[in-house]
Amino acid sequence: MDNRSSPLSPELWLNDLFSCKAVQQGGVIRRKARGVERFAGMETFLSEVRRRGFRVAANGGQIVIFCNREPVRWLD
Image 1 (cartoon, rainbow, N blue to C red):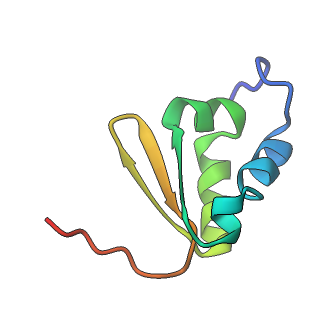
Image 2: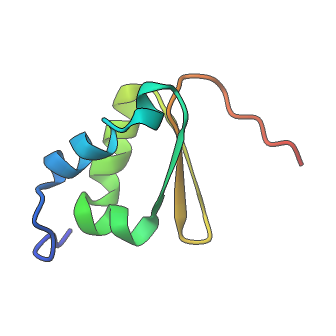
């Protein structure tokens, strides 16, 4: 992972991401996959998601994080 273009360390970026209001309320957040890779690296990001017990999905270059421990059901 190359983080030279970011002023934030991966730890600071992840802390900022997971301290937003949607996370605190058990909501959903979305980020571009390339942004996750750029700022934290996918493995570091996924490790943090797992540590928190959250679920994550990827589609069309977007990452969707379900910020609670509830199961995700696909409705189609």
